[in-house]
Image (cartoon, rainbow, N blue to C red):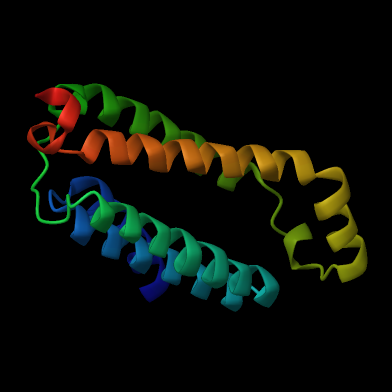
Length: 161
């Protein structure tokens, strides 16, 4: 229950806080709570990957991007204030779909333990699914470059003068 509150509260804080540093810290709380959920669900490897990749690398990368652009002290305006009602409707539809899927699922089959062969998992991850991981890395790079572009101050840009 505490971890679920951490995930939901951290996720809401990420999108509602106006200070970008506070949003990054809230994102780290969300990632840490999610790692705790994975550990409690009996997936310690996924929990460790969550801590190493998301809580460690991605969060530090985002904080470095914020600090390097010197936008850490800036309070950002609310860019999506006109889209609030549409976002609420889409969120309600998504929540309804998740609730429907949870109710329609036969949870009796979820109790069965599945043995995982780590060698087969690693082979599949680095052979069959290497391209999707490379595509995700390029998307993350594009997101960081976009964040740097959006967070820069025009008065400090040489091209603005």
